[in-house]
Amino acid sequence: MIDFLLSDINFAYLVALVIVLGLSLLEGLALLIGTSVVSLFDDMVDIDVDTDVTSGGITSLLGWLCLNKLPMLVWLVLMLTSFALIGIVYNYVIALSVDLAPLYWLSKPIALLGAGYATHILGSAIAKLIPKNQSSAVSSQGFGGKIATITIGKASQGNAAQAVLQDEYNQKHYVMVEPDQADQEFHQGVSVVLLEKHANIWLAAKLEQ
Image (spheres, rainbow, N blue to C red):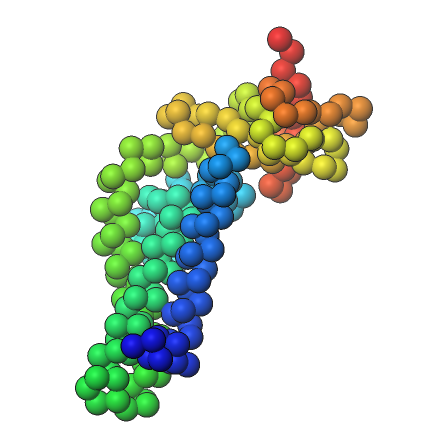
């Protein structure tokens, strides 16, 4: 069984599982230092989940795949895990039955299609179990004027630090911030007001108490 799992036909699926394991370990380490890779990744990617997913084309497909219902990292783990398991099971069935090389070539497209369908079904179910999922409809573009607190690093112009804010649904969002003035620095624990977003960095001003 080990020889089968480590064979060349399962290489892509093992890579997918290794990525999932790495993301899980990264999230666990991040939680130990008081942050979240899930939230930070969502805010950096900043997919506009308010887009009308009933329209045609790619937007409709992404909506069907539940990309607008789940945190990006959760969706990625679900997609990769489904892809890997379906591919390995398919290859195992072929190996036990006909063992024809051309059929192994079909494993990747079959696994990809199966992963898409599994993500649609499981993603819809998981989305209903996430109480804070409603807040995922809040785009980080609307964070202007909100108060955030520096959590990791020291922020200066050209050197962003991580900050956390809480939206109206009580969900935490992790953003990268820099002072809007060259002579300012934000240390850990300092509260700032988000002013304007440039790429993935927010310009901020120190909150005067």
